[in-house]
Image 1 (tube, one colour):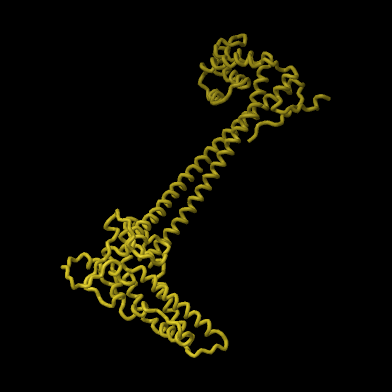
Image 2 (cartoon, rainbow, N blue to C red):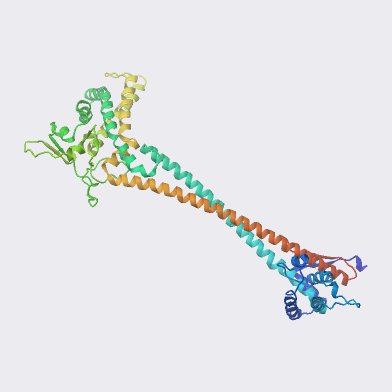
Length: 470
């Protein structure tokens, strides 16, 4: 009846099971030390054989390996076999002695049980932990690469948008400074266009004045600057204030000429949202189609009767921050009036003594808003600040450089993260293969132990649970 009852053993408890059933003794480890010394001595003198090389390559040699080595030596050492079945070869004698020491008190079973237990408790869990850690590192690297690529895309979009605002392309970063200065010189062309457009809103101003005089006679409309620009053009501030064209112009000194000069000779005006500290002008700026910087650099003999415009009064009106701010405020005042008139005109049953068609009001508003856009659009603000604040140009160039450096740095991070992810993935694959080899050898050893135990119990089937797996 016992033949049909299987023996179930939990691998981590195998050594305890063998000792409790007196198959092994508790002091088996002292015998193993002697056996290991014999094995280390015996493997120094081995015949050249492919199977022996396979057995000895990176493997812990146990009892069942020794049996295979003896079978191989029976072939390689056949010449030393005596008529009594023994061998005169020292190699054969060494390994037979080792097998004999293993079988004494079944030391080989205890050693095999400990090998299986260590594999289950320590080796395989350690490999699994390393693989999990490598997988985590790989995921982190992939996430880091994705974040770097996202950062590259964001920085490129921001750089493209900034360069588009400045009206330049990013083909050659070394020429950004000269390209910006060249583009900023186009501000004079914008001013010429603004003066031409201002002439178109004279009917709107006349309508505003007439309406105010009719609806609120006690109030007056002050749009002197718009009218002056339409009549006289973009003259100097001196001529605007005094009504006389100066004989000579002396532009204010630029902070670009004196790096140590941090004073602000300009006037407070509209907040453009950028650092506009510095002087109001720099030599060589194109003011309204003429190079005022050249006038300042031209040696002219002093004449006590000459009318000289100096400082901020030497600047053209649209190049003066105060004047520019006042002009924008006046245009916005006119814009609000025209919008209100269009709203009132759209109300049912509205009656107005000063009539203007809806289409005419819309055209007036469109002309006014076009001038406002020319004065306040981002590109115009950049050009104005570049020409009138050398520090602003440095800030723009620094900002562009930061974006380019961010792109390069993020690209390097992405490349390194990708390489690292590939490296750890290969390490994880190698560890998994190593674990599979360990599991395979552990199962082979487990099968040998099951076979040995089965023979001790009259051929009863032996099953072991909790073995190594990966």
